[in-house]
Length: 220
Image (tube, rainbow, N blue to C red; front, side, top):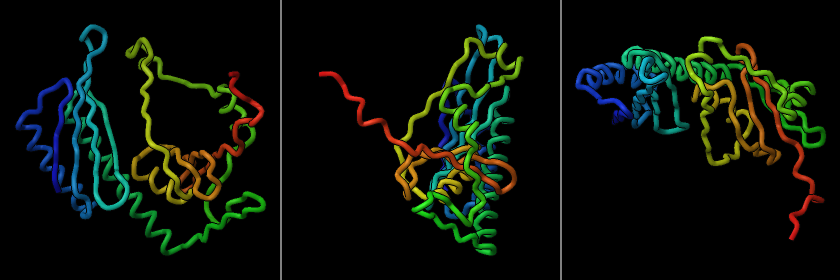
């Protein structure tokens, strides 16, 4: 498996490269079909350099969906260990989920007439949750120490191309990237949707079922 290491704001030492090579064998054992692993190390300073940390991002590419994981620590070696643990767990969960699906097929079926999705452990979000998301009234709680450490607040933004897929495929992709939610376009309904993790192997799905009103026009 080809391995590339990139440093942003930090130099990559021979010692770090050798440790990465040791970790690669562990990942290769779990994902033998992977072709390439990208390791990105980003160094950040906060409060005039009095606080520093390193973020290690791992991107595993090969046959099938891309697998990503990241971790942050004051020491880049510790961050690397955490990131490797995360990506290994994500690969294990995805494998176990495929085994469970083979042994216990759920036979998901989408009812066009009612819009219901049966035969899969998904539960639509409640009216209260949808209303809170639509009005932007979902409370966001942050750790007090974290707020003090990162001030002013920095919002990380990422933009991806829209992908059409089934709900089941979206759940698989969410497991591989290690997130608690995954945005996609539902291939069955063409509606922007998001799947999210609940408990165990239970998941939820939220879909935007309406389009913008055709009565709204831009003045010429």
